[in-house]
Amino acid sequence: MNKKEKRQCIFIIFCICLLVSTILSYIYAKKQYHVTSAIVEELINEYPDSEQKVIEIIKNNYLDETNNEVLKTYGFSVVSFLKPYILIFSISIIMCILIFIILIIEIIKIIDGKNKKRIYEITRYLEQINLGNDVEVLSRKEDKFSILQDEIYKTVTEMKNEKNRAIKEKIEFADSLANIAHQIKTPITSISLMTQISNNENLKKQANRLDKLVDSLLFISKIDAGALKLKNEEINVYTLLELSIEALEELINKKDIAINLPNHKDVTFVGDLDWSTEAFINIVKNCIEHTNENGKLDFDYRMNPLYTEIIIKDNGNGFDKEDLKNIFKRFYRGKNSGEGIGIGLSIAKAIIEMQNGFITAENSPKGGAMFNIRFYCH
Image (tube, rainbow, N blue to C red; front, side, top):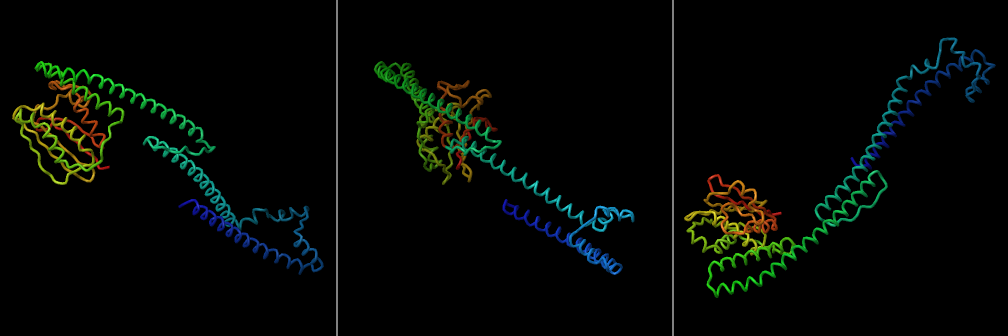
């Protein structure tokens, strides 16, 4: 029931009560009329000479103060005249009380409704702010919420300023990191050329490792600065996994690892194929590095209305408990990480999350490591 309907309902109840009170009053007046008529008739018949005086008293509602207590001598009181109508008056009083209570309740509801509306407005404002949306400032109203509203605006303004400062510092840090990486890139190129001339394999290896580290730092700086722009296109999962495996074909052949990749048609998700391939190369490479020679990699994937799920399993020794807690942290190198710099899985996680997805790592019940990746549709 809306406010208009409630007001109409109260008005109807008030009219009904007024009508009932009028009817009850008419019944009482009619009864008094008949009683008075009977008394006047008896008086006139008994005292015809006093007819005009009796009629004048009734017409002018004249009462002589000296006669106020006459009926008392005969055992009458005001209550005596109320007794026949006590039920009528009780009903009238009860109905009046009910109307008063209903009015009070409705007034409380109206006030409560206004309070709820104000709370809803402020809550919606905070929800939109939390979502990062630009919201118009609520019009200020002088009520008991105005002080709270002012304090919320102060807090939100301070939070926005703090956020802007943090973003600015983050961009400056990312730019600095990118500049440092670019500066390092030049001498690394020179070192690489020198190593090719000298045929020093160990120096070549270190130069390549340093080059990869600089590339990773450049990539991280782009992510931190929010400068990495991803496409939104339909990606076939089989194609994605096939490209990732092809990029690591040399390493796979070297360790003679068997690949089990089923071809499920029409399993897709929306994202960037190039960067997704980069992410899955890092995941698959991690599995290969932790799988023994003549090992096996199993791939499985499926799609439902909520998300596309991809599972990658190896039959290696699995993760150490300590590694599982930190596997996706930047520059974390586990106990059996080999010569990696500990950034591949961190980069993979960042790319996946930027495409409305998430990744988890765990030990498979049948042994070995297992990665579970989901890309949500919405």
